[in-house]
Image (cartoon, rainbow, N blue to C red):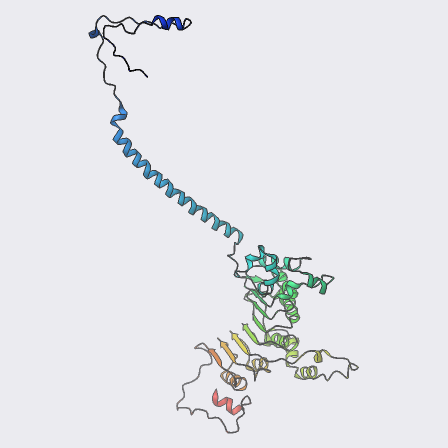
Amino acid sequence: MPPLETISDDEPFPPQASTSATNTAPNAPSPTVLPRSSSADSMPPLETIHDPGQEGDAEDEDDDDYETEEDDEDDYDTYDDEDDYDEDEDSDDEAIYPDGLPLDPLLPLLYLSRPFLHTARKKLYRRINLVSVWQASLLLRSLKAPQHAARNAVEDSEDPDGDKNHLAHLVRSLNLDARGDMSLGRGGAEVYFELMNMCKNLEEIRILPSLLKSATKPFLATLRSLTKLKKVDLASGTDPEKPFVLTTARVIRLMRESWPELEELVAVGLKGSDFGPVSEQSIMWDEDLEDMLLEGNLKAMFGGSATQGEKRSKPKGLKTLKLLDPDAYEDELSLLLKHSADTLIKLQISRPSQELSRWGLASIFLNYGSNLTSVVLDCPGSWQPMAKPTIKRAFPCKRKDYKAGAPSDKDVSLVS
């Protein structure tokens, strides 16, 4: 590129187009020639253009810094949004599990792996805890399903008709932890009773809801159908008008006829037999009938056929008995422990009523407490008050011919 030539002040401005340029571009428009001022002094000097941006450069830099801080805050807001997103996820979990996450951590895996379902279902269905009637209805619906994911080829071959419910037969422990009343009229009782009737292999049952009187007959019928129970936790109803009453007569009959393997009994608000019908009292005290049924003496009367008494076994005896707020006489409590003299190792009696006397309590301990390893006795201060003795009583000494579990009235009187 040739060097630029110096423009002389004498040359016209703008410079005239050359002839060669005109000839080379005949069709090009001729440039417009502006008249030149006669004197260079006639043109006013150029004024400095005011640029507000130059004055605000420092402010712009500050703004940039401020924007940078805002960007940082925006980034922080982004993390806040992520936290909000996590909170939304937690809210979704609450929507899926409104009553809280499953107690068994293995339960969610059922939705992921069918082989895991077949492997772990015995553990998953062994213990069931229900906190509402709605949960009980969902469980009942799944147990009553004609086909469920728990079935496999082996079970189908064993049960070609598909009548056996394998899931219900896996249940060993059922805990009804719902609050409020439960009856046929107010709802809930029918669902629970049907669920218990399906789980024929139940070994443990705990019923916390308060039953009403209308549910007495179906409830007792359901308990009679559970012949493999080893641990039972029952309570009388708390309704002030028509509650279900758990009486000694009902419990004793269930232990004799339906619960031969019962090892632990927890009874809350156990009442005496006089709180129930007279017919139940007569059955409770009919020891001759019980002996005949247990020994099979009715076999000849039925033409040699097996009686119901021969089919059932003698109760093995309780290992643990817990009575909370009992309101029964000592003779009925002794009948409750009739087969437990050699097996009872834990006894708890809390807040007994005035029906249980000191003499009766001492009789229970002397007759059935020879193997006790744990005793909890919680009596209120107003229970069976005793006059302060004028002389110091001698500590009762055990007779030489004393036999454990067979105290005399004199022994009981000395202890009480």
